[in-house]
Amino acid sequence: MNLSINFSSEQKTMGILNQIAEYLYLKKKDPDAPNTKWVKYMHGINRISILLFLLAMIILAIKLLR
Image (cartoon, rainbow, N blue to C red; front, side, top):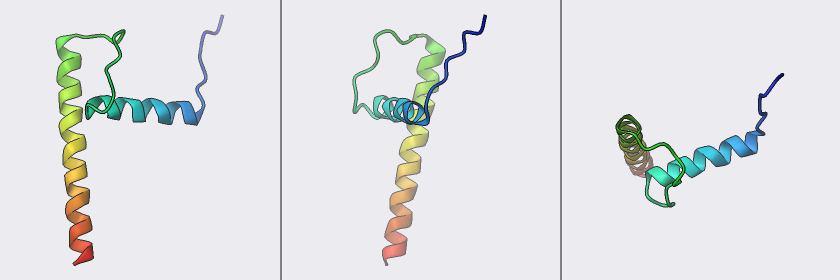
């Protein structure tokens, strides 16, 4: 019995974008998601890395426009 679920690339992309929106507090968190200490740490590290990436993109854009 095969229980694999095939997601389209659009569904995968929307899932990623939804997760980023939750990290940046743009979207309300899923109440059914697991809420352990280690998941909180992981989300905190992901949030920091996304913000640093956006900061680096802004700095690069400023340098390119000068």
